[in-house]
Each structure stands twice: as C-alpha cells, then as structure tokens.
Image (cartoon, rainbow, N blue to C red; front, side, top):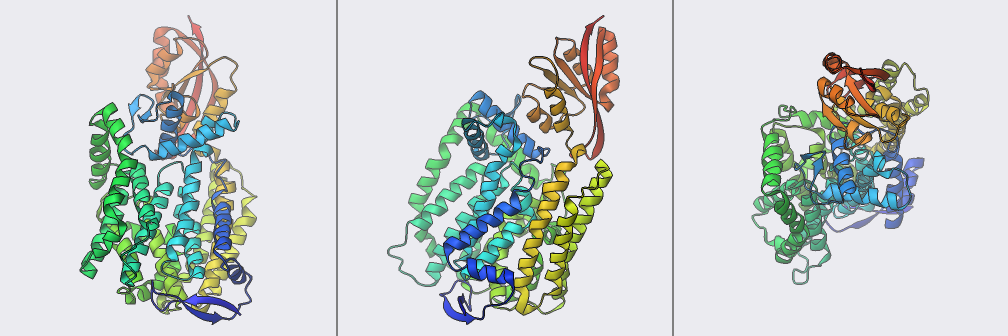
Length: 580
C-alpha cells in the first residue's frame, strides 16, 4: 500500500488516504518519485532536459525576435556597454534589459570556460530560456503544493513541462520562458499568503520568505518585460478583493518593505537608461510597443477567441484533461484555492482575448493555473463524463498530425525523408493511441502519463531530427558558413533584399543592410568584400555595377525560404574582381 493524500477542497489541510499500488509502470514511477520532494524535483529536472534539449544546440537562429535579442546581446558583449540596447546602430527599446543581461552572462561564462566563438553560438543565448523553462516547471510544482497533494503537483508540473508552447519557448533566446519563471514564483508566494489568511493562520508573525520571493520575482519580471507581470498580479488581487470583499491579507506581503526592495532592484537601470537616452526608452517601450499591441499595429491582429482555439494545441497534452476538468472547476469556484487560481487565470485571459494583437506566447504565464486546476479535479476524480471525454482522442490526433506534417515537410523542402524521425514519431503515435484507448475517469492519470512520454518522443523527432535538417529554412546559416570558408582576411559583407536579423547575428555586426545599388558600391570599396544580393535586388545591383565599372563573380548562390516573409529566396554571394 502506498500512502498519498487527498484534499476535498482546493487549498485546505491534507487528510491521509490509502490507495492501492497500481500495476502500470508509469504510475508506479510516479509512486516512486513522489515519495519525497527531492525525488520529485530530480524527476522533473530530468523530464525537462528530455523535453527541452532536442534541437536546443543545433537549430539555427530563428527570425525575427530570437535573432534580434541575440544580436543586441552580442553587441553589448562586444562593446562592454550593458546599459544601452541596440541592434546595429538602431536603438532597441521595446523591452527592458533583463534578458540581455542574462544572455550576456551566459556568453561571458561560456567564453571564460574556453568555448570557441561563444558569441556566435545561438544555443549559448538560449541558456537563460532553458533555465527559465525548467525553473518554471519546478516552480509550478512548488506552487501546486499550496493547493493539491505532492502527486498532483508533480502531474501539474509535467503538464507544463510537456506543453507545446513551453517547449517552443525553452528553445528560443527571448524573454518569455524567464518571464514565466518570475510570474509563477510571484503567484506561488501570493497564493500561500492568501490561503494562510483564508485559513485564519497567525497574522502577527507572517513569514518573511513569501514576501521576499514575491517582491523579488516582481522586480525580475519588470526588468524582463516591463509592466506585464504587474497586470497578472494586480488583476488577481483585484478579483480576490471583490469576491472576498476584503484585501486585508495584502498586509501579510509587507508591502512597504517589499516596494522599497523592488525599487532598489529595478530603479538603477531605469535611471541609467533615462540618463543615457532621455525619454526615448519610455516612448518606444510604452508608446511604440505596448500601445501598438492594443491597436494591432504589428500585423498580428485577431478576433477574440483565438487563444481558446490555440489552447488545444499549445497546451497539449494537458489540454484534453483541462477540458474534462472544466465543469468540476466551475463547481469548486468558490473554494479558496480554486478561487485564487481562477482569479489568476480568467481576468488576464479576458484581457488578452480583447487586445487586438495576439501572439501565442502571451498567455503562457496563465497555463500553470490551468494545470493546477486540472490536477485538482483529477485528484478528486470528478472529471466530466460528458461528450468532452471524446476529447481524449486529441492525445492521438496531435502526434499523428505533427508526425505527418514533419515528415512530409522534410521531404518537400529537402527531398530527404528524415528516416531517423520515423521510429520516434511512430512510438509517439502509439503512446498517444494508448492514452486515448485506455482513458476513463479512474485511469486518467495513466493516460496523461502516456501522453507525456509521447510528447518526449515527438520533441525528439521534430526538434531533434526534422527541424535541424530543414536547411532551406535557415539561409543565414548557409551564408555564414560560406563566408567562413573564404580565403581572405577579415571578410566584410553587405546584404541587399535579405535583411533578416539572423544574417547580422551569424555574420558580423558590421554587415551592411542596403539595396542593390548600395551593395555594388560597397563591393567597389575594397578587397575581401562580399555582396549578398537576393534575386529581387539583382537587377539594381547589376545596373549599378555596370555604371561604376565593377567587375565581380558569383562565389555561390544559396536557395532557401524566408520564414518571416513566407516566400522563397535566392541569394547570390558576389565577390569583387576589381574595376575596369
């Protein structure tokens, strides 16, 4: 017999309950790892590495956001200026400095450890995202412990760890995985303060640890992505205050000392950037970035409901169970724990649905609340028995569709069948099929675990094998490889018609972004120069070359696909032979 714990209500004291040890190996594994916190943390750490490392090292920079972040960090390292944020000569003031500092620390550490050309290896810039993703998984476990049993907390963390959206963000050198870490840390501390108040625990000597975690996480979130973390916290607190008709519990957060600590952490850089750039940073970040999203000025405008549709893919494999848990969560909405989690989830979700600009990762900080609500219903075995149970087929549909799209895409783009991915994809489909066929209300946990293993295999197939093989999707990598093989000292380049940030990152910060005529003039200015001219700009290049008497040859032509613009590209690498 294995002793576990069950809670009749979210966020209430534990009551021991016996449960027979099941025969399924995956369920027995969960029995084993939930015997202690140390085992649970080690298990989640291993799962995170298995899910996030495939493709982490060998997928080239992804345009455009990842490459922009990485290039701005690279320039900080090159110049030693860790206050100003620039992409080449242009300021990049859309986001605060937090992620650049973390990426810069990763590059400097890798260089100090002797890694050759660390500043050109995109995976080094992804290390903070990997740490953020794994940290967010572990913090989801910690947060869930305030609401459910250790076993259910592990399952909630597994849902986050295996979710499609977090798997993507863990492999991108940008802010969102680290932002998730700070949000979960802040909300986990906030939940403990709120639930201790609900239980009437001693208010005279509240612990310092929870406020310290909360205010430090808040400062980290502000340095990473500005006021977004404040929105999550403020909407949660406001909703709880309305529902409870009281916000007295906020004093347990020690707000005076906490605000002072947050300002100590946040203000130095904001003062430094204001001293350096004046009002430009605040104009660009608030007016140019935040307000433009409200008006859908970034070509990502969509109607309300998009996030709900995307949820069934981005939160797979947890999404089917989340759908089945919805009626039980609604019935428990007035219980303290469920009320807190819904206050975390619902108001912010509504805001994101109403904002015109919609990108999938915006709602990622709300997924831990969904995971904990879902396992709360799973723990009490009150999942819906209605037609939503048919949604368990989704555990098979996603790996089947993903495998077909990955293999067909590889064949279409590279004329290679990606055979190494086939057994992994087949195993993922089989486990997804098991998750579907074996599902019923009493065996939902086993189905979820099968789906999590299917997600691991799918990650290995898609990220580890297929995506790195799609070389046509990464023309910048091919161009950089060609320039490294030239026989001359200090090659310089100018690009016409292909201006993706990944090209600047993988070649050199000094790479000029110009038009066809400018590329010809650049080529005419000295030796060991190369013009990277996309086919649509070749005519103006040739005309200008003829006008100035430039002789040149084609060193190489690279065929590829620009995923940012959604079109094929053909880029000629021209080298000067001198003038007539």
